[in-house]
View 1 (tube, rainbow, N blue to C red):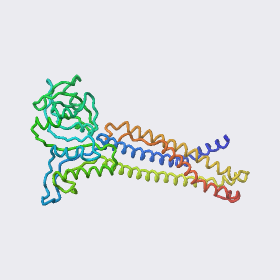
View 2 (view 1 turned 90 degrees about the vertical axis):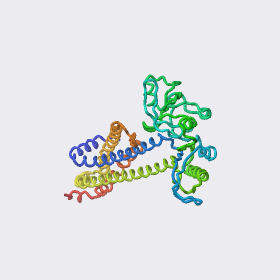
View 3 (view 1 turned 60 degrees about the vertical axis):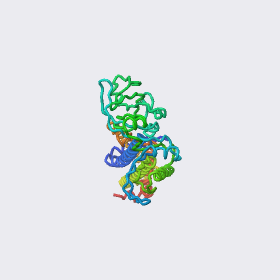
View 4 (view 1 turned 135 degrees about the horizontal axis):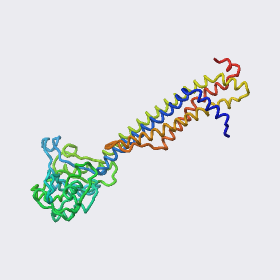
Length: 409
């Protein structure tokens, strides 16, 4: 039941003790505000790392040439492992779990010319599976296919920046451009999830790149997606690839530097483990902040009760029950901490939104936000715990006899 007289007394007490009220409220406000900022910052860091990994397929394996470091079957370390089409065939269809296997051959930067437009861009010859390993998106047309590989078609897929610079009017599909002195038919435009450099390149069929640029059967690297393989399964697939290539090139299967394997699935899980550890650390700091707020509230309420011991004695002498005395103090505390906790929550959320809006290039810090349900529960816990912290001294003071309370200075 709403007691107007009791609330008028609460507001009168708050008005007479502004500093005490401010200190009580600030303890709650600061605890919740810092918790929101810490949780939001941790989530922003997590979102940024996840977006960085989503830019590349998080379920892919990349294989690069390396140098042997372990003697094997009478051969000394230091041999450079060079990939050819044989390496592609050694793993394509022969290692369980691999999908969309593709080889890559870097052809350096080439002048690409259409009409009076000209630019120097990176050229790569590859297989159709490269599209999936790069986690790219087709903007227009199509990517390379197996027929392009088999028939050695002189076709090219351009990164979006190249298409915009060579074809500012947008009309590019079916047009021929000059690439390093050779004509190629533009069949599509892609957008890579990586940085600008990953988009400023053109892809041509592997067989065409090897043939027209006189690269024999050479291959620089290989890639493959691995579906929904778990990190543990991806490590098994990684070792199977190493075993196949070790048998082909005669190096130790334990020599991890003979070929470099970049397992993005395993890397992604390692990053998630680090982020989980950061989240745990943030929660520990946040809980510590809340505990500090609770201690602050408890100390201030002890001072409140001490200051009002004489008042409590007078009330009891006039017939007030211990419950009415305690409830008055607790209601005042709940009111102050609830308002301060809500302000801390709102100011924290608005601060995160303001910081997020000011970041032009978020990088690995994106969309710093917080779960309002979690924050609201934390606010409620802080208010209840802080109130309970002052309940004990309030009950103790209410149990003092009126004569002893009136003697209190």
